[in-house]
Length: 77
Image 1 (cartoon, rainbow, N blue to C red):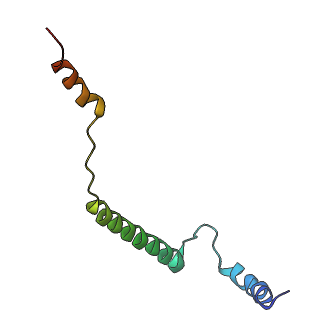
Image 2: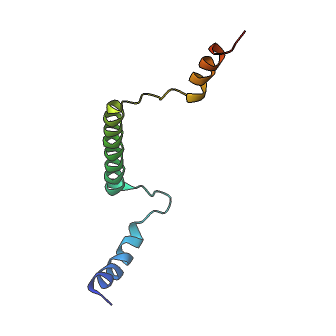
Image 3: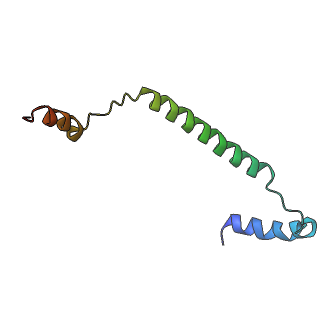
């Protein structure tokens, strides 16, 4: 058994007396993890907006649409 497991098994009975199963909260660690995730999502969204602003997308004309008017103009009456 490692030292960490030995320390945890000694501390668990102490926490059993004060632990209320009806009042479990995430605590400081839960808040820090949630805050880190929120900051990461915010940074990703900001980066995505910056990259999408740089995109210069010009749609190519449809070859079938441009060929149809030219074909109609070349018909003989």
